[in-house]
Length: 452
Image (cartoon, rainbow, N blue to C red; front, side, top):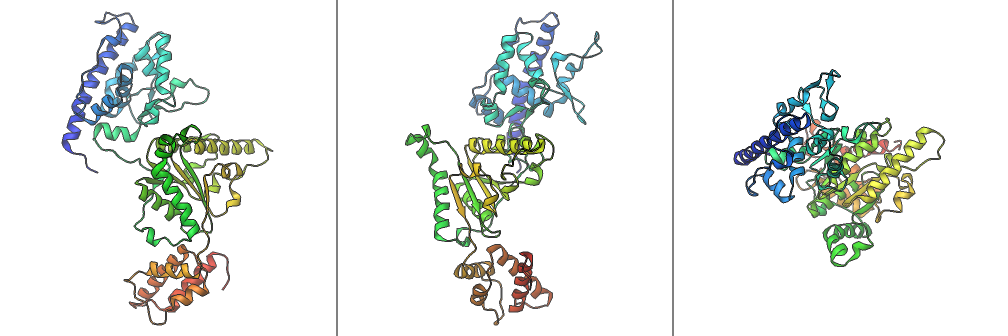
Protein backbone atom coordinates (compact mmCIF):
# COMPACT_ATOMS: atom_id res chain seq x y z
CA UNK A 1 0.00 0.00 0.00
CA UNK A 2 1.38 3.37 -0.99
CA UNK A 3 0.90 6.22 1.47
CA UNK A 4 -0.25 9.63 0.18
CA UNK A 5 2.65 12.07 0.01
CA UNK A 6 0.72 14.66 2.04
CA UNK A 7 0.16 12.13 4.86
CA UNK A 8 3.89 11.46 5.12
CA UNK A 9 4.69 15.17 4.94
CA UNK A 10 2.19 15.93 7.71
CA UNK A 11 3.68 13.22 9.92
CA UNK A 12 7.21 14.45 9.19
CA UNK A 13 6.35 18.01 10.21
CA UNK A 14 4.80 16.92 13.50
CA UNK A 15 7.61 14.49 14.27
CA UNK A 16 10.20 17.21 13.63
CA UNK A 17 8.63 19.33 16.37
CA UNK A 18 8.37 16.33 18.71
CA UNK A 19 12.03 15.43 18.23
CA UNK A 20 13.11 19.02 18.83
CA UNK A 21 11.13 18.92 22.07
CA UNK A 22 12.66 15.56 23.02
CA UNK A 23 16.13 16.97 22.43
CA UNK A 24 15.44 19.95 24.71
CA UNK A 25 14.23 17.59 27.43
CA UNK A 26 17.27 15.34 26.96
CA UNK A 27 19.74 18.22 27.21
CA UNK A 28 17.96 19.63 30.26
CA UNK A 29 17.90 16.23 31.99
CA UNK A 30 21.63 15.71 31.41
CA UNK A 31 22.35 19.21 32.67
CA UNK A 32 20.25 18.71 35.80
CA UNK A 33 21.75 15.28 36.40
CA UNK A 34 25.34 16.57 36.32
CA UNK A 35 24.62 19.86 38.08
CA UNK A 36 25.23 22.02 35.02
CA UNK A 37 23.47 25.36 34.39
CA UNK A 38 20.04 24.89 32.77
CA UNK A 39 17.09 27.11 31.94
CA UNK A 40 14.67 24.94 33.93
CA UNK A 41 14.53 23.35 37.36
CA UNK A 42 12.36 20.47 36.13
CA UNK A 43 12.16 18.94 32.66
CA UNK A 44 8.36 19.15 32.83
CA UNK A 45 8.69 22.89 32.51
CA UNK A 46 9.55 22.25 28.85
CA UNK A 47 6.07 22.04 27.38
CA UNK A 48 5.49 19.74 24.41
CA UNK A 49 4.46 21.46 21.17
CA UNK A 50 0.81 22.07 20.41
CA UNK A 51 -0.72 19.65 17.95
CA UNK A 52 -3.57 19.93 15.49
CA UNK A 53 -5.60 16.73 15.98
CA UNK A 54 -6.41 16.73 12.27
CA UNK A 55 -2.84 17.45 11.21
CA UNK A 56 -1.39 13.95 10.93
CA UNK A 57 -1.64 10.35 12.08
CA UNK A 58 0.93 11.16 14.77
CA UNK A 59 -1.15 14.08 16.05
CA UNK A 60 -4.35 12.01 15.92
CA UNK A 61 -2.77 9.27 18.01
CA UNK A 62 -1.41 11.70 20.61
CA UNK A 63 -4.64 13.66 20.96
CA UNK A 64 -6.89 10.61 20.65
CA UNK A 65 -5.14 8.93 23.57
CA UNK A 66 -5.00 12.22 25.53
CA UNK A 67 -1.27 11.71 26.02
CA UNK A 68 0.36 13.73 28.73
CA UNK A 69 3.99 14.74 29.08
CA UNK A 70 5.22 11.28 30.06
CA UNK A 71 3.39 9.37 27.33
CA UNK A 72 4.44 11.78 24.59
CA UNK A 73 8.06 11.69 25.64
CA UNK A 74 8.02 7.89 25.76
CA UNK A 75 6.47 7.69 22.29
CA UNK A 76 9.05 10.08 20.83
CA UNK A 77 11.86 8.16 22.53
CA UNK A 78 10.66 4.85 21.07
CA UNK A 79 10.37 6.40 17.61
CA UNK A 80 13.69 8.25 17.45
CA UNK A 81 15.99 5.27 16.53
CA UNK A 82 13.85 4.72 13.45
CA UNK A 83 13.74 8.30 12.19
CA UNK A 84 16.80 10.11 13.60
CA UNK A 85 19.18 7.52 15.07
CA UNK A 86 21.95 10.04 15.80
CA UNK A 87 19.68 12.02 18.14
CA UNK A 88 20.61 9.88 21.15
CA UNK A 89 24.36 9.72 20.50
CA UNK A 90 24.85 12.06 23.48
CA UNK A 91 24.01 9.14 25.74
CA UNK A 92 27.11 7.27 24.57
CA UNK A 93 29.21 9.57 26.77
CA UNK A 94 31.52 7.51 28.98
CA UNK A 95 31.93 7.61 32.72
CA UNK A 96 35.63 8.47 33.04
CA UNK A 97 35.81 7.11 36.57
CA UNK A 98 34.66 3.66 35.49
CA UNK A 99 35.68 3.78 31.81
CA UNK A 100 32.25 2.70 30.61
CA UNK A 101 28.83 4.18 29.89
CA UNK A 102 26.61 5.59 32.59
CA UNK A 103 24.36 2.89 34.06
CA UNK A 104 21.49 5.33 34.57
CA UNK A 105 21.30 6.08 30.84
CA UNK A 106 20.38 2.50 30.02
CA UNK A 107 20.44 1.67 26.33
CA UNK A 108 21.69 -1.07 24.06
CA UNK A 109 24.05 -1.12 21.13
CA UNK A 110 22.56 -3.19 18.34
CA UNK A 111 24.31 -5.93 16.38
CA UNK A 112 24.25 -3.84 13.20
CA UNK A 113 22.71 -0.52 14.29
CA UNK A 114 25.40 1.93 15.33
CA UNK A 115 23.13 4.23 17.31
CA UNK A 116 21.92 4.21 20.90
CA UNK A 117 18.87 1.95 21.36
CA UNK A 118 16.79 3.23 24.30
CA UNK A 119 15.58 0.92 27.03
CA UNK A 120 13.07 1.34 29.82
CA UNK A 121 15.98 2.64 31.89
CA UNK A 122 16.53 5.42 29.33
CA UNK A 123 12.88 6.41 29.64
CA UNK A 124 13.08 6.39 33.45
CA UNK A 125 16.19 8.58 33.33
CA UNK A 126 14.50 11.19 31.15
CA UNK A 127 11.23 11.19 33.02
CA UNK A 128 12.37 10.72 36.60
CA UNK A 129 16.09 11.40 36.96
CA UNK A 130 16.87 10.24 40.51
CA UNK A 131 13.34 10.88 41.83
CA UNK A 132 12.14 7.46 43.05
CA UNK A 133 8.47 8.43 43.19
CA UNK A 134 8.57 9.47 39.54
CA UNK A 135 10.53 6.34 38.67
CA UNK A 136 7.79 4.23 40.19
CA UNK A 137 5.18 6.24 38.25
CA UNK A 138 7.17 5.54 35.08
CA UNK A 139 6.68 1.80 35.62
CA UNK A 140 2.96 2.33 35.21
CA UNK A 141 3.54 3.14 31.53
CA UNK A 142 4.74 -0.40 30.91
CA UNK A 143 2.05 -2.40 32.72
CA UNK A 144 0.02 -5.01 30.86
CA UNK A 145 -3.23 -3.04 31.03
CA UNK A 146 -1.81 0.30 29.91
CA UNK A 147 -3.10 1.36 26.49
CA UNK A 148 0.48 1.42 25.19
CA UNK A 149 0.28 -2.38 25.48
CA UNK A 150 -3.41 -3.03 24.87
CA UNK A 151 -3.35 -0.96 21.67
CA UNK A 152 -0.02 -2.50 20.65
CA UNK A 153 1.76 0.84 20.37
CA UNK A 154 4.95 0.17 22.31
CA UNK A 155 6.32 -2.07 25.02
CA UNK A 156 9.47 -3.11 26.81
CA UNK A 157 11.00 -6.20 25.27
CA UNK A 158 11.28 -8.60 28.22
CA UNK A 159 14.90 -8.79 29.39
CA UNK A 160 16.58 -11.93 30.65
CA UNK A 161 14.90 -13.33 33.74
CA UNK A 162 17.76 -12.33 36.04
CA UNK A 163 18.00 -8.73 34.79
CA UNK A 164 15.99 -5.66 35.90
CA UNK A 165 12.71 -5.08 34.09
CA UNK A 166 13.66 -1.62 32.83
CA UNK A 167 16.77 -2.98 31.15
CA UNK A 168 14.53 -4.33 28.38
CA UNK A 169 14.59 -2.67 24.97
CA UNK A 170 11.94 -0.02 24.29
CA UNK A 171 10.18 -1.30 21.17
CA UNK A 172 7.70 0.50 18.96
CA UNK A 173 5.40 -1.91 17.14
CA UNK A 174 5.82 -2.25 13.38
CA UNK A 175 2.22 -1.21 12.85
CA UNK A 176 2.66 1.96 14.92
CA UNK A 177 5.89 2.81 13.10
CA UNK A 178 4.10 2.52 9.77
CA UNK A 179 1.14 4.57 10.96
CA UNK A 180 3.21 7.35 12.54
CA UNK A 181 5.63 7.77 9.64
CA UNK A 182 3.99 6.65 6.39
CA UNK A 183 0.43 7.23 7.52
CA UNK A 184 -0.40 3.63 6.58
CA UNK A 185 -2.21 1.16 8.82
CA UNK A 186 -0.15 -1.89 7.87
CA UNK A 187 -0.94 -5.45 8.82
CA UNK A 188 1.81 -7.22 10.76
CA UNK A 189 4.55 -8.89 8.76
CA UNK A 190 5.01 -12.62 9.11
CA UNK A 191 8.27 -13.46 10.84
CA UNK A 192 9.91 -14.44 14.12
CA UNK A 193 8.25 -11.50 15.92
CA UNK A 194 4.83 -12.48 14.55
CA UNK A 195 4.68 -16.18 13.62
CA UNK A 196 1.25 -16.06 12.01
CA UNK A 197 -0.01 -15.67 8.47
CA UNK A 198 -3.26 -14.06 7.38
CA UNK A 199 -5.34 -16.58 5.43
CA UNK A 200 -7.97 -15.76 2.83
CA UNK A 201 -10.06 -17.64 0.32
CA UNK A 202 -11.76 -17.00 -3.00
CA UNK A 203 -14.52 -19.47 -2.08
CA UNK A 204 -17.86 -18.65 -0.48
CA UNK A 205 -20.35 -20.28 1.87
CA UNK A 206 -22.00 -21.99 -1.11
CA UNK A 207 -18.73 -23.85 -1.71
CA UNK A 208 -18.72 -25.22 1.83
CA UNK A 209 -20.45 -28.61 1.90
CA UNK A 210 -21.35 -29.51 5.48
CA UNK A 211 -24.21 -31.13 7.35
CA UNK A 212 -27.01 -29.22 9.06
CA UNK A 213 -25.71 -29.79 12.59
CA UNK A 214 -22.26 -28.49 11.69
CA UNK A 215 -23.71 -25.42 10.00
CA UNK A 216 -25.81 -24.67 13.09
CA UNK A 217 -22.69 -24.75 15.28
CA UNK A 218 -20.91 -22.43 12.87
CA UNK A 219 -23.89 -20.07 12.83
CA UNK A 220 -23.68 -19.87 16.63
CA UNK A 221 -20.07 -18.69 16.37
CA UNK A 222 -20.99 -16.10 13.73
CA UNK A 223 -23.86 -14.86 15.93
CA UNK A 224 -21.56 -14.44 18.92
CA UNK A 225 -19.00 -12.48 16.89
CA UNK A 226 -21.72 -10.22 15.47
CA UNK A 227 -23.58 -9.64 18.75
CA UNK A 228 -21.05 -10.11 21.57
CA UNK A 229 -21.39 -6.46 22.62
CA UNK A 230 -25.17 -6.83 22.89
CA UNK A 231 -24.87 -9.97 25.01
CA UNK A 232 -22.13 -8.70 27.30
CA UNK A 233 -23.01 -5.01 27.59
CA UNK A 234 -26.64 -4.36 26.66
CA UNK A 235 -27.93 -7.52 28.31
CA UNK A 236 -25.53 -7.10 31.26
CA UNK A 237 -24.09 -10.61 30.99
CA UNK A 238 -20.50 -9.33 30.94
CA UNK A 239 -20.60 -9.60 34.72
CA UNK A 240 -20.71 -13.40 34.57
CA UNK A 241 -19.61 -14.29 31.03
CA UNK A 242 -16.02 -13.71 29.92
CA UNK A 243 -15.43 -11.98 26.59
CA UNK A 244 -14.09 -14.01 23.71
CA UNK A 245 -15.13 -17.27 22.08
CA UNK A 246 -13.18 -20.51 21.89
CA UNK A 247 -14.08 -23.33 19.54
CA UNK A 248 -12.49 -26.66 18.66
CA UNK A 249 -12.90 -27.95 15.12
CA UNK A 250 -12.08 -31.63 14.88
CA UNK A 251 -12.43 -34.34 12.30
CA UNK A 252 -10.56 -36.02 9.42
CA UNK A 253 -8.23 -33.90 7.29
CA UNK A 254 -9.71 -32.15 4.28
CA UNK A 255 -13.22 -31.83 5.70
CA UNK A 256 -13.37 -28.01 5.65
CA UNK A 257 -12.03 -26.85 9.02
CA UNK A 258 -9.63 -24.23 7.65
CA UNK A 259 -12.06 -23.02 4.99
CA UNK A 260 -14.76 -22.63 7.63
CA UNK A 261 -12.52 -20.53 9.87
CA UNK A 262 -11.60 -18.33 6.93
CA UNK A 263 -15.22 -17.83 5.90
CA UNK A 264 -16.24 -16.98 9.48
CA UNK A 265 -13.60 -14.27 9.46
CA UNK A 266 -14.73 -12.88 6.12
CA UNK A 267 -18.39 -12.77 7.13
CA UNK A 268 -17.43 -10.93 10.33
CA UNK A 269 -15.07 -8.52 8.57
CA UNK A 270 -12.23 -9.93 10.67
CA UNK A 271 -8.75 -10.99 9.59
CA UNK A 272 -7.95 -14.65 10.26
CA UNK A 273 -4.38 -15.45 11.25
CA UNK A 274 -3.13 -19.03 11.15
CA UNK A 275 -0.41 -19.61 13.72
CA UNK A 276 2.73 -21.15 12.22
CA UNK A 277 3.56 -23.85 14.75
CA UNK A 278 6.97 -24.49 13.17
CA UNK A 279 8.02 -20.99 14.29
CA UNK A 280 6.20 -21.08 17.62
CA UNK A 281 7.34 -24.34 19.18
CA UNK A 282 10.89 -24.21 20.48
CA UNK A 283 13.06 -26.68 22.33
CA UNK A 284 14.48 -23.85 24.41
CA UNK A 285 12.84 -23.18 27.75
CA UNK A 286 10.48 -20.23 27.69
CA UNK A 287 10.79 -19.57 23.95
CA UNK A 288 7.47 -21.18 23.00
CA UNK A 289 5.62 -18.99 25.51
CA UNK A 290 7.50 -15.91 24.27
CA UNK A 291 6.66 -16.66 20.64
CA UNK A 292 2.98 -17.10 21.45
CA UNK A 293 2.95 -13.98 23.60
CA UNK A 294 4.00 -11.99 20.53
CA UNK A 295 0.88 -13.18 18.71
CA UNK A 296 -1.56 -12.75 21.59
CA UNK A 297 -0.18 -9.33 22.55
CA UNK A 298 -0.62 -7.98 19.03
CA UNK A 299 -4.05 -9.54 18.65
CA UNK A 300 -5.32 -8.48 22.08
CA UNK A 301 -7.50 -5.59 20.95
CA UNK A 302 -7.72 -6.26 17.23
CA UNK A 303 -10.63 -7.58 15.25
CA UNK A 304 -8.77 -10.81 14.52
CA UNK A 305 -9.54 -14.50 14.67
CA UNK A 306 -6.62 -16.69 15.74
CA UNK A 307 -6.59 -20.09 14.07
CA UNK A 308 -4.40 -22.90 15.40
CA UNK A 309 -4.21 -25.69 12.83
CA UNK A 310 -2.97 -29.12 13.95
CA UNK A 311 -3.47 -27.74 17.43
CA UNK A 312 -2.57 -30.95 19.26
CA UNK A 313 1.09 -30.06 18.57
CA UNK A 314 0.67 -27.21 21.05
CA UNK A 315 -2.38 -28.08 23.10
CA UNK A 316 -1.69 -31.75 23.66
CA UNK A 317 -2.37 -33.70 26.79
CA UNK A 318 -0.28 -32.99 29.85
CA UNK A 319 1.92 -35.83 30.99
CA UNK A 320 2.90 -37.25 34.33
CA UNK A 321 5.81 -35.24 35.69
CA UNK A 322 8.81 -37.55 35.65
CA UNK A 323 11.50 -35.16 34.43
CA UNK A 324 12.30 -31.48 34.08
CA UNK A 325 11.30 -31.67 30.41
CA UNK A 326 7.84 -32.91 31.42
CA UNK A 327 7.50 -30.05 33.89
CA UNK A 328 8.39 -27.45 31.27
CA UNK A 329 6.06 -29.02 28.71
CA UNK A 330 3.20 -28.91 31.21
CA UNK A 331 4.05 -25.29 32.04
CA UNK A 332 3.77 -24.45 28.35
CA UNK A 333 0.32 -26.03 28.17
CA UNK A 334 -0.80 -24.19 31.30
CA UNK A 335 0.45 -20.92 29.83
CA UNK A 336 -1.41 -21.55 26.58
CA UNK A 337 -4.57 -22.40 28.48
CA UNK A 338 -4.42 -19.11 30.36
CA UNK A 339 -3.71 -16.98 27.27
CA UNK A 340 -6.49 -18.61 25.25
CA UNK A 341 -8.96 -18.25 28.11
CA UNK A 342 -8.08 -14.58 28.66
CA UNK A 343 -8.10 -13.62 24.98
CA UNK A 344 -11.10 -11.33 24.33
CA UNK A 345 -11.43 -12.30 20.66
CA UNK A 346 -12.18 -15.52 18.82
CA UNK A 347 -9.81 -18.50 18.93
CA UNK A 348 -10.39 -21.55 16.76
CA UNK A 349 -8.35 -24.70 17.23
CA UNK A 350 -8.36 -27.44 14.61
CA UNK A 351 -7.20 -31.00 15.01
CA UNK A 352 -7.68 -34.32 13.28
CA UNK A 353 -7.86 -36.15 16.61
CA UNK A 354 -9.92 -34.67 19.42
CA UNK A 355 -8.53 -37.24 21.85
CA UNK A 356 -5.10 -35.61 21.61
CA UNK A 357 -6.33 -32.28 23.02
CA UNK A 358 -5.82 -31.73 26.73
CA UNK A 359 -9.11 -32.05 28.62
CA UNK A 360 -8.48 -28.77 30.46
CA UNK A 361 -8.75 -27.01 27.11
CA UNK A 362 -11.79 -28.93 25.98
CA UNK A 363 -13.73 -27.93 29.10
CA UNK A 364 -13.15 -24.27 28.32
CA UNK A 365 -14.33 -24.37 24.70
CA UNK A 366 -17.67 -22.77 24.01
CA UNK A 367 -18.22 -25.25 21.19
CA UNK A 368 -16.79 -28.51 19.90
CA UNK A 369 -17.57 -28.84 16.21
CA UNK A 370 -17.16 -32.22 14.53
CA UNK A 371 -16.41 -32.17 10.80
CA UNK A 372 -17.27 -35.68 9.55
CA UNK A 373 -16.38 -37.23 6.24
CA UNK A 374 -19.01 -36.18 3.67
CA UNK A 375 -21.70 -38.64 2.69
CA UNK A 376 -22.37 -39.65 -0.92
CA UNK A 377 -24.71 -36.73 -1.69
CA UNK A 378 -22.28 -34.26 -0.16
CA UNK A 379 -19.42 -35.82 -2.12
CA UNK A 380 -21.40 -35.33 -5.33
CA UNK A 381 -21.85 -31.65 -4.49
CA UNK A 382 -18.12 -31.40 -3.81
CA UNK A 383 -17.23 -33.05 -7.12
CA UNK A 384 -19.52 -30.69 -9.01
CA UNK A 385 -18.39 -27.62 -7.08
CA UNK A 386 -14.71 -28.40 -7.53
CA UNK A 387 -15.01 -29.07 -11.26
CA UNK A 388 -17.13 -25.95 -11.79
CA UNK A 389 -18.53 -25.13 -15.22
CA UNK A 390 -15.35 -24.50 -17.19
CA UNK A 391 -13.73 -27.92 -16.77
CA UNK A 392 -14.53 -30.41 -19.56
CA UNK A 393 -15.30 -34.02 -18.67
CA UNK A 394 -15.32 -36.96 -21.05
CA UNK A 395 -18.57 -38.88 -21.51
CA UNK A 396 -17.23 -41.84 -19.50
CA UNK A 397 -17.02 -39.78 -16.25
CA UNK A 398 -19.87 -40.68 -13.88
CA UNK A 399 -19.64 -38.30 -10.91
CA UNK A 400 -22.52 -39.92 -9.05
CA UNK A 401 -20.84 -43.32 -9.24
CA UNK A 402 -17.53 -41.85 -8.07
CA UNK A 403 -19.36 -40.23 -5.16
CA UNK A 404 -21.05 -43.44 -4.11
CA UNK A 405 -18.05 -45.75 -4.47
CA UNK A 406 -15.20 -43.65 -3.05
CA UNK A 407 -15.30 -42.07 0.40
CA UNK A 408 -13.18 -38.96 -0.01
CA UNK A 409 -12.97 -35.65 1.83
CA UNK A 410 -13.37 -32.33 0.07
CA UNK A 411 -9.63 -31.76 0.23
CA UNK A 412 -8.97 -35.16 -1.33
CA UNK A 413 -11.48 -34.49 -4.13
CA UNK A 414 -9.69 -31.23 -4.90
CA UNK A 415 -6.40 -33.12 -5.17
CA UNK A 416 -7.98 -35.73 -7.46
CA UNK A 417 -9.36 -33.05 -9.79
CA UNK A 418 -5.98 -31.33 -9.89
CA UNK A 419 -4.30 -34.64 -10.80
CA UNK A 420 -6.94 -35.32 -13.46
CA UNK A 421 -6.46 -31.91 -15.07
CA UNK A 422 -2.68 -32.34 -15.17
CA UNK A 423 -3.00 -35.83 -16.64
CA UNK A 424 -5.34 -34.63 -19.38
CA UNK A 425 -3.05 -31.77 -20.38
CA UNK A 426 0.04 -33.99 -20.38
CA UNK A 427 -1.82 -36.30 -22.72
CA UNK A 428 -2.68 -33.37 -24.97
CA UNK A 429 -6.38 -33.77 -24.27
CA UNK A 430 -8.83 -30.96 -23.42
CA UNK A 431 -11.11 -33.21 -21.38
CA UNK A 432 -10.62 -35.26 -18.20
CA UNK A 433 -11.45 -38.91 -18.66
CA UNK A 434 -12.65 -41.36 -16.01
CA UNK A 435 -9.27 -43.07 -15.74
CA UNK A 436 -7.61 -39.72 -14.88
CA UNK A 437 -9.87 -39.37 -11.86
CA UNK A 438 -9.54 -43.02 -10.85
CA UNK A 439 -5.74 -42.75 -10.91
CA UNK A 440 -6.02 -39.63 -8.74
CA UNK A 441 -8.28 -41.46 -6.30
CA UNK A 442 -5.77 -44.31 -6.01
CA UNK A 443 -3.05 -41.80 -5.15
CA UNK A 444 -5.21 -40.28 -2.42
CA UNK A 445 -5.97 -43.70 -0.96
CA UNK A 446 -2.25 -44.53 -0.86
CA UNK A 447 -1.67 -41.31 1.10
CA UNK A 448 -4.14 -42.53 3.70
CA UNK A 449 -2.43 -45.90 3.99
CA UNK A 450 -4.71 -47.90 1.73
CA UNK A 451 -3.13 -50.35 -0.68
CA UNK A 452 -4.42 -50.70 -4.20
